[in-house]
Amino acid sequence: MRTRSDRLYEIDGLRLLAALCVVVFHYTFSGWVGGASPVAFPEESSWSKYGYLGVDLFFLISGFVVLMSAWGRSPRAFLVSRAVRLYPAYWVGIAVTATVAVTLGQGMFQVTLPQVLANLTMFQAVPDIANVDVVYWTLWAEMRFYLLILVFAWIGMTRARVMAGLWIWLGLTFGVQLGLVPGVADLVVQSEFAHYFIAGMALFMLYKFGLNLQIALLVPICLGNAVYRAIGYADAVGDRYSVTYSTAIITTVVVVIFLVMTLVALRVTQRLGRPWLVPAGALTYPLYLLHAHIGFIVFARLGDAVDAHVLLCGLILVMLGAAYLVHRFVERPLAPALKRLLSRRPVAPALGVLVAGQPTR
Image 1 (cartoon, helix red, strand yellow):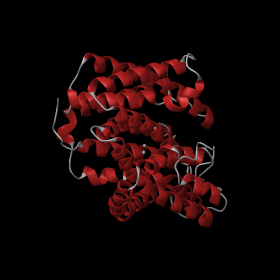
Image 2: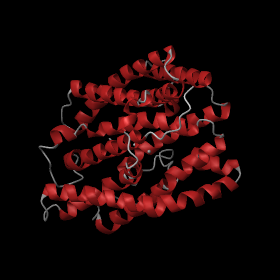
Image 3: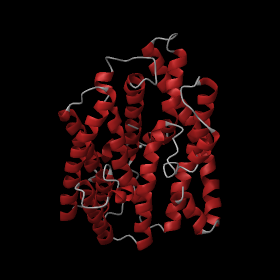
């Protein structure tokens, strides 16, 4: 078993890359094609329309790093770590996005107080209440993944148990896709994205314990299903925006995503990691939370007065700056205090935060 605890700096860089892909997708393609932004980028959209695949990379990374974070932790410690990681920046993101929408949005995005209050739980999808920002849908997918990790933590993580759980999850995924498992089960199974979470977890097992036959079979099967589902999803996105996606490009991007994360798990990319990627990666979550609706509103208010490409570059830089401020003055100071608070409380309330309540397309 591998025991080195070196931080995987390259994953921080990949997280930021994935976030920037999503930002560019929204700003130069889905915003103006979908009618949320008046500033058009017809030339850039020919390639930026693929930027939503950054979410696929997010989910693969999440499978890897969340299992890494949960390994050896108690269920309570895992719950606290996830709450501390997700909620402070998310609450600020909701507050800033809602304020900008109400004061500067000129009716572009409707935000109500009950909607905001429901969004604060991060479980607004349960009563089918609209997200304050379109990107929040991925957080619901992440929360359901955390619930499965919590089950692993409760049972007790061993190599055999985790690998058995991954095979069961993959079997249920195919069962849902083939109609052999009731559709309601997909609320937990998440067949549309399960292959990324499963493969990410398997790659962490590769990183921690080395290669074995199960991993050598599991990851390629997940890759095959990821390509299949990504092509189908691209068709749906194409219908939504009246564009055509290249099957070859979709396939290539998904394969590259898996290949890169496999190289990370094998420590081949370790020489590329640099400590400065840690603060860069720290910008990922707040950047993701803040950029979409606020960016569309800025395009609407300044699009007629500022050159489109100047506005695009300036807005991305401003959003990166805002992400830094949230990380520096919200996440860093609040995380220790929130961790102490939750650690002193009974397990049930902490569990309620995650069960009752990261890297959009």
